Structure formats: C-alpha cells, structure tokens
Length: 282
Image (tube, rainbow, N blue to C red; front, top):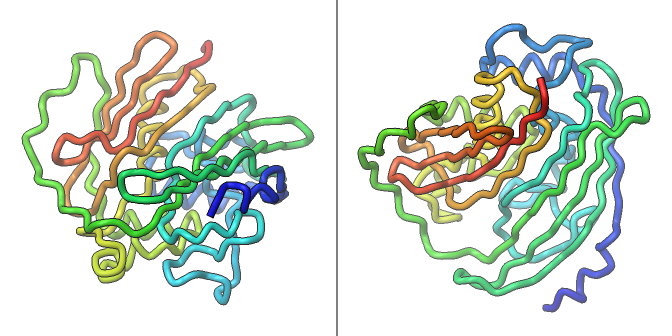
C-alpha cells in the first residue's frame, strides 16, 4: 500500500452543525467539577470543551468491532486497526457561546504512510474551523495515527515520583471506570479500550482500561484555567505513552511568562502526554 492510495481523500471536506447545548456543558461540568461560576446558556464555553460537541453519530450498524465508526467517508479507509488521537494544535480566537448554533468545517489536509518500530503507520492530518454567527472562533489541526496490532503493553510499575518543580501547579488523578465511562459518553466514543476490560486486555494487549488522550488534555487545560485569570489563546499537545486505570497519574503545569508547559506523568514517571498552553493579555 502506498500513500497514493489515499490521495483522493486529501482535500475532502465535511460540515457539522451543533447548537452548543447547555445540557452538554452541564454534563461536562458534572464530570470535571470546575470552580464556579459554572457554564450556563449565554456564557463562554471553556477552552477544549468544544470536543464535547460536533460528535460523530455513526449508526450502530456502522461501528467496527473495536467500537470506532467504519472508515471510508470523511476519514480515508486505512486498514490498520489501531487508532490514536496523537496530538493537536489549537488557536482560540473567540469563545464559543453556549446555546448559540455553531458550524464546524473539516478538511483532510494530509495522509502519510510510514514505518515505525511497531510496523507500518498511517498519519492523517485533519484541519477544523469552528464558526459562530459567521465568526471564526476556533482553529484546530489534529493528528490521527493508525497502526497494526503490536506486542502486549506491560503494566507500569509505580515509583515514588520526585517532587514537582517549585511554583508548579499540580494535580493527582485517579482514573477510575466511572470517569472513563462518563468521558466516553460525553464524546459519544464507543472505542472499547476505554470501558471493556476483557477486550482491552485480550484483543488490544493493554494491561487495563486506557485513559482517553483527550481527557488527559482537557484535565491539563482545566489545571491551567483554574490557576490563572488570563485568557488561553493557544494549546498544543502530543501523546507519548498510554495511561491506564490501574494507578493514579500526575498532572504538572509550569507557568513561564506567556506559556505554561504541561505534562501528564504516569505512575512509573513516564511522560504520557506533553502540552503547551499559550496565554493572552488579561
């Protein structure tokens, strides 16, 4: 297979509309428990909460064995079964307003096939623009990676993590099944690695349920949002290793001028996800 097999998908577009329902924002708030004031109709949607909208609503008959929608419409029909939301780059131009209709325009920007340590990989880059009342509010570019099944992933061996840097904002998260279920429900994500333990272990080779990468990114964003009054104008992240529901993990934010360096550390000290938040003027 060559990248030319998927050149027809480059430039393919889709358009999705959503009313930015207050009920969905209230459900997200119940899961994340942000400090008051809570988001309500007419208020600004917190950054990254747009991931709770514009959801893929594939019919049940069009889900794959793993729970993902079958490919071949907007997303190219890459045959590799394992899928990962590997990273994103986001600009927040204007906040989305809860309760007002919005439109998300997507485009496939690139499809690249490579060979990695675990075998062949396919990288799909997707660009999104989210508009409200004709105004571009959010620009996002996502990296989706597809790969063949690999060797079983061993469970992390917990260690005593070193003290966080002085001045860092820190939170420890216990990713239990209730949290993973709620995030799957909020994002209409049926990928079985997040809620079906026998499938995750025996079919995909994970030692436990996998914590959603976007959930970790949202929690890092919430850590920033709770500790500064400055607006967040940009955010980027890269997934590096999986987290599981087997032990707590640690979130660390290191403010540095107009940037906040972010990291999610697994119980073994491994960096699972790294990110940067960019701050605007108050």
